[in-house]
Amino acid sequence: MPPYAPDHGTTVENALIQALAGFAIVIVPGLDGSGPRHWQSRWELFLRLRGITVHRVQQDDWTRPTYPDWKRQLQQTIHACHQPVILVAHSLGAVLSVRMASEHGLDGVAGAFLVAPADIDHHHGPDSGRIASFGPLPATPLPFPAVLMASQDDEWLSMSRARHLAVQWQATLVNAGAVGHIGNHARVGLWPDGMAALDGLARSLAVQATCPL
Image (tube, rainbow, N blue to C red; front, side):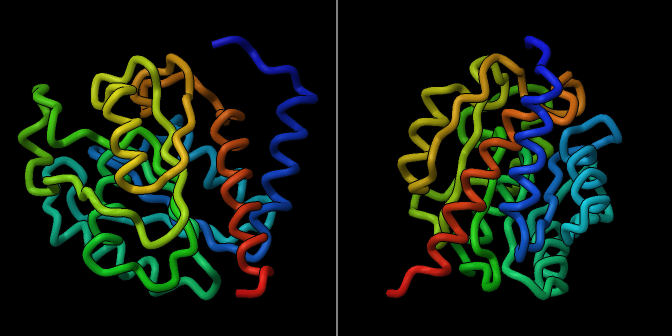
């Protein structure tokens, strides 16, 4: 991945902070959690230091997840927010968010930024058994606007499946380039491309909130 010029990164970061004013960000990590070098962890620190409200879902067991347990923790985190929520979810966290939204609607959530959702229905790798209880993936539109950001070389989600899921969920698909699963081992740093996509989502949500019905 090519390096970003400092002025470009600064412009993207400043724009994002402006766009997120008035929202609470809920970070929803995936299988095994998000370590300190994960873009979710970097964003959490970056946003908090600039006055954005950020909540992070904490699970009791990151390595042996069950849908009921993870669902309860996400519900509690959302209920603790006092502003419209934007979910920032990765992998199994994105699947958790989408399934809960399809089942319950997720009151208080204004939109979702879904990164590399794990394709439970088609992935058959060594870790597929650990996430089986989260399937099947919903096939209905989400009750709120969403961006689905997918990588061209993600072992958990092909681009063709990403396009299919985006249509089913009525989410905007953004091509992240060739950055793998965009997880703990991805070298994306603060990930300006992701910030730009989240900025676009937040701005569209703000416009919708101010437009009369």
